[in-house]
Image (cartoon, rainbow, N blue to C red; front, side, top):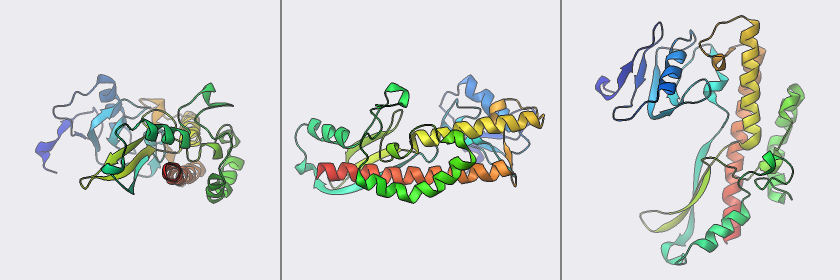
Length: 263
């Protein structure tokens, strides 16, 4: 991109921060986090900042942080594998009723969503009776999950298979959309749910502990990292890959549940 398209933010003793934020307010907390990240010795060349940048855990959400020889779990975040998926249907706008309440109710009935009871027993956002298709999908994921929790037992304390094919809370959503040809689409945004959050949170804390043991001084302890080639690095990368696979399967199951219920 041409240099005139971004602002160059400075961080004392750090790499350049290239910020595509012209016309967008940058909150002070996010600016401080960017400056903190820029000072890390593992950051490669520069940091890129998107217009939607905002405060996060250690590192901002909406920034690209290239690292060399290390990985920062907090920069990856806790919503691992978050993404979007769209499915075109055979329906057109003419097939839709004047009021979409019934369609919304059918989607809400088909896909568990929200969160109650602190995610514990009876949580409205989890399956209480697992559908056969969800159990089948879980067979792709379970062997690696069992190996993961055998090495890190704290990860096996909450929902896993009973969140597969569910929506959750926050900015996750399901929409009924029309394209330029008036064809009906289902669009959804979701990720690796509670188990992905546990993986992210667990390894962020593990990285903090390793930095303390190594007596590494950081501008923010949440910017703790794992060195490439270390046991924790390999374990974290494997866990993230599993969470990304879970998120992809989760989206496919959600889409199928919507379509089957609507049909």
